[in-house]
Amino acid sequence: MMLEQMLGVILTLLFLADIFLTVLYARAGSGLLAPLWNRAVWTVLRGLAHLAGRRRGTLLSLAGPLIVVSLFGFWSMGLTLGAALVIQPELGAAIRASGGETHTDFLTSLLVAGNSLSIVGGGDHSPYTTGTRLLFLMNSLVGASVVSLVLSYLVQVYSGLRERNALALTVDLMTDGTGDAAVMLARLMPEGDPSNLKSQLGNLVGSLAATKEAHHFYPLLFYFRFEEPRYAVSRFSFVLLDATTLIETALDRQRYGGLATSAAVASIRRGARMLIETLDSHFPTAEDRTDLAGETGRLRRSYAAATRILESAGIPVRSDGTEAYVARREEWEPLVRRVAPTLGYAMSEIDQRPPTSQTSASD
Image 1 (cartoon, rainbow, N blue to C red):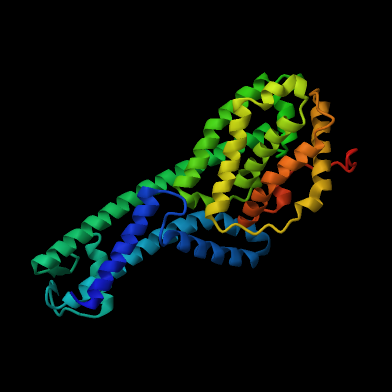
Image 2 (image 1 turned 180 degrees about the vertical axis):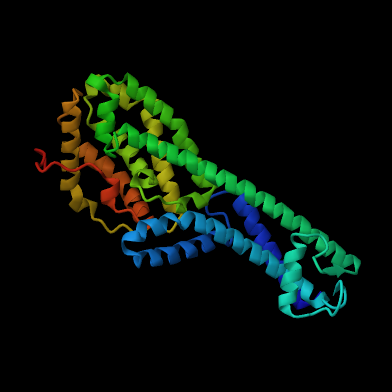
């Protein structure tokens, strides 16, 4: 076997391993080439988006589909190139044109490789030895298998995307489109009755878990960005984390102590954090340089605004929960601040509660 052919075999095995790890093994961060390719395409698109002005959001919303198409093209070209390196030395001898002269240039080997990956017999070129016949047969099996796997993978990616969007829209509807966790709690606890809140949060747990696992199994989902912030993972995760933080620190402890320690609240808090941690750990999230210690005043004002909304809905609140709220929010907000800008969202689009102009007594 020539050095060129050995290189072709190595290249083919490398791309097959990448497809296996991405499609079949399916774990965030497990691919060899796909994660690097996806990040490179995303970086180029973000650069172009900065030049698009008002159309920036529209261009970024095309990132997910474009990355999917480009990744499948990348895999196809890699497998074709590997097969071409194996085939070229055999052109004119073991592999010959069905009629006329057999060209031995690399472009012809690419054409024969592409055909052999999709059609047994290689189109206008045919193998004339046992080894090349087996090569063409193997190429056709690899090509058919990869196409089937890719199509199945594509279906699963879009199924996960649909579930994620359904969860995001559900959370947004619970906030009456405001994206404010306090409004969500006020609407789900009419006259301070927590029974509806428990059932609704319990219903969200399954969808949240499915969305978290979808991002773990299909990392391509990270790059599907929509123009409307309501569909952003960072936004609905922020709302859910803020809601559980308010339940644990703002609601009257004597009346709602059982709610704060319920399985539904704990599951929502942990699930939302696991989701945002998965994105932060396995993707090129932005460095957050915000000094949250200097943001204490803003967080206190946000807490004061939330308690006003809850009180206006007839929900008893604590008078001493400010510092506990600030401390817990300082634990998870940096995660959101790293993930949101990576997909082109400003924190003003994620944190939708307008802080009251009046500071709390502890500020």
